[in-house]
Length: 183
Image 1: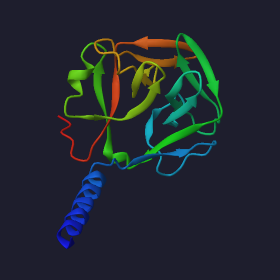
Image 2 (image 1 turned 30 degrees about the vertical axis):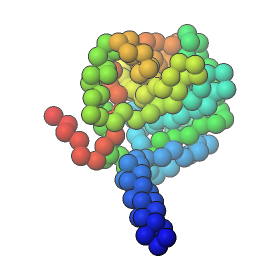
Image 3 (image 1 turned 45 degrees about the vertical axis):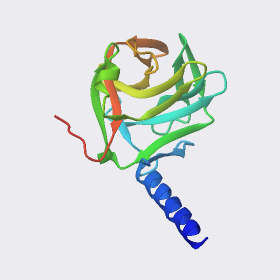
């Protein structure tokens, strides 16, 4: 009896330890207009201010990665050839900036590019699948958006371009990891 109990306790400790070692050290905080100190910077806007990586829940679409502009409580969701706006159910990506990097990628071979890498989950589109977080630089500013990573061979980057949904095949995707070979 004692041996069985001891074995169960040791097994439970090992499972908890293993699960905790796999946990990422990033998280999301509720966003209501102010930027937390540990928010992950996604790039710069045209004025040179930092832009951030957010996520918003839209009951008609899913959980979608979005760009957060400091001081602006509303985010824009470019999805299904439409632009949607949201001011509720928004979170902002937080953690240690040093644990993230942007990896060049393209729509046709994204899945090969990501082998043995951890793309940061950007949410999901209901009835389609998981999405990742991407960015491009356009006319001197960063545009944060979604990568339709569920679509093998056609994993396009979708973003808001002044109120119009745009899709491009070449972009950078957000990747997480402590020991990253950046070469």
